[in-house]
Image (cartoon, rainbow, N blue to C red; front, side, top):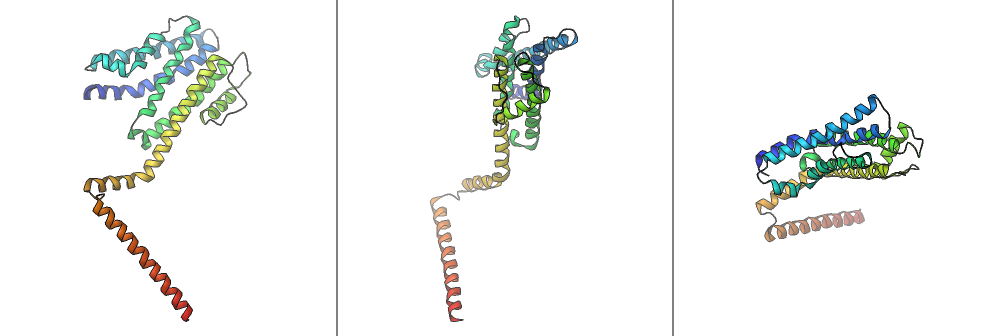
Length: 250
């Protein structure tokens, strides 16, 4: 992509993450098999999310310099649009969970993800996944397990942290939700670990990069540092021996 298409993709990233996350409450509401207002809201969310993916696909194909190359590099965007339209039969509506794979792009962010702002965004995404994922799990398990909303959230937390609990998925839908929650949890832990490492090791890595650029890692410089270290150790040993001798004389 060129500079223009990268800017457009960056602007679309956050709203598309939100649209993908809305898939969970949409599926949860659908699986309740309620009628009336709840059914209307579930259907509206389904259409809104799918149309958001369609709009992103159309916009990106309009701005990228090479459409075929962009599709090869981003096949998920095309797959979501083609395989998750709201007009699919009820038996195939489970394919809507493919939209959640868009959340995995969070793990592909660079140093911005390791910043404080990036961690806040990741934490909010993890919290939303716990709440919505737990609700979707309860909806899928409605006929097999009598679970409360709190038990669904508890299951989501234990699944995201890979701790595990006595609650297990028994339907295909809940199993897919479990896989997605685990992937989001692993991505969040990876981002958190990377942020901590960058916080404590960032200055040292910057110093090493500066030394490399200045030629401080040449063979001569390395040899001089080693000799300096040996000399400091000998001086410390000499000082220790002097203290021992002085102690004996006393």
